[in-house]
Image (cartoon, rainbow, N blue to C red; front, side, top):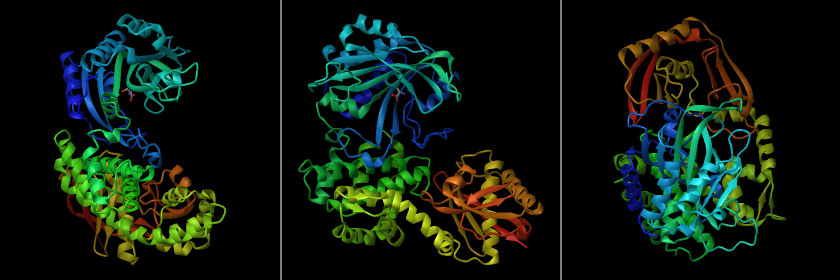
Length: 594
Ligand code: SER
């Protein structure tokens, strides 16, 4: 087997497929376009969906790339040998060009000739067939003709050998390639479907000739595609004979640095090792999210919330192993240095990455400093290894200590948290102190005079009008700041607004004012609000009561208020300024003139 570094494997892979007529395309953003079903790009095929469905690709019908991916699953599970939240996927595609025979032959040649993996170490699976597609004897035959004996070709059902991203879209049966290691398994029927770890999957070739519709039916696509994916990290592990991705060059510099900054020794004991890996994994991922040109920053929503959790969990583990939180910045710089030559955006956005990390660390340290002390005290008096929901809620309510961290710290101490009880306490508290809760929800609107109240209503209207005028449902509020004089509204959009667009927004806003629309407010749980289609601009916990403000058919938002009671109270809306706020984020300053 060839021992390659990560850079060598990327290059070797791309060059091999280039020699087979593939165009090398660059990695797309980690934040998917036009795909509301996922927060992050989780596979190389994501950015290629339109082409798999039949659009023609500008670079031809044979493509290959190395795609940045994030799979968070449950972040709290990360820290073992194999899981990484960020990874790179090597992929090659045929868009209606070659199909099963060539795809399998390419993979076989690359693995056995280029990477020099002995044929005896390779096992494969193929689709066993069902009502949607026949048993894939064709692929099995190709494997056999290349030298894989029958007893290393396994037929498996849909749950193993059918690939689709999410619920609907292009999909099909696949053939998966496994490397066999020395692990012993007692099961007679041990196969790649067994969880013993003897078979490690490294490559998945999907034969995408179907489209799954929302009603669950499968129809044939207009073309037969191939979509393959090989995990870069996992393949490097296998080639270098190491057990864990953390023992490869992806992480070596960062782990050395974490050890230096904490004074700890990697692999000295299980819990230290886990913390070191969590810091390395989460900061690598956070660095890539912050470095992405989409301009995601820590927040309480969507990708921003995942980012926040990654950073905060890394900071907590830094604390556990005695590393200063600011060491996180050094770890991030180490990843920027490692990856910037491949992913230029990391270099371009390096100041922003470090700045945002610093800000989030500061915000979190304020929140947690007190909470951690308190939870240590609480743990001393816990009885029967159970922490009641009320106490967990008090940690959140009084110290802002997130429930997931309480659960995690308790679990490390063998204590179970009554999570249901926590949610119950949460809901009870909301009911009892509605007034108090409303005060908290006011957030940026501490001043609730007439001018700020009207501007707040105008902000909701603007949020809706921007989507309409710019024809972009993906436009989201990225920040809002209201004084008695003006509103300031940040939103994600990639270019300056044209003079015409600004006029159109003003006309639409003033039309809503002229329509004299009543503004209504209802209270409901956050789940009900989401179901009602309300936009949300801050974190809400399960069962929490929220207020939803509705402006006729114009807008519906979760918000603490206060708001005008009728749009007629607002006067005339004018845009004062439209400018860039940060990369990918525009900022509008607007006023209401009486
Ligand atoms: N889309 C398939 C996967 O993610 C192959 O690339 O496994």
